[in-house]
Image: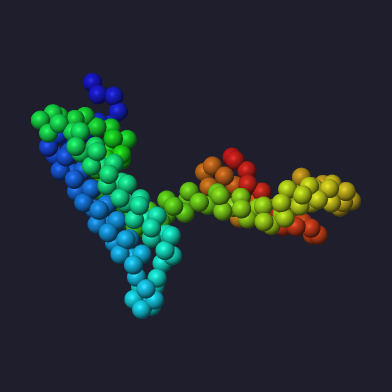
Length: 178
């Protein structure tokens, strides 16, 4: 009995697939390195110059990934059969590439919470703004802070983001785990 999702691959097939990943990363590293050499004369509306540090970082990242995959490839015995789990497939970059829209969607999901927290801090002028709003709300004769009207901005399976409507004072964004 096999526990979990396991794929079997010959060492030869595994080496071939990993080698394709090495070549892909080497091409990408070369592309980013060429991008660092572009000048304003090479800039067009369709191909604007990108920040130099970003291009250097991307070239270095792809070179590093090529080195990692080369190390793995060079330590695979072509005569053996390997039983791989999902983590192995991801580490060796053996799964098909994700479509660009899916990659973007996952990136936005990962950054959404951080972005909302950043907005929260900026909109409240820091923690002091929240304390001030709570004091103002609690001192108000009309309502308590906990009963101020809220507007739901975004709701996921895990989090609910709401805007607390305060008549006077900073905007408050509340993020709560369900």
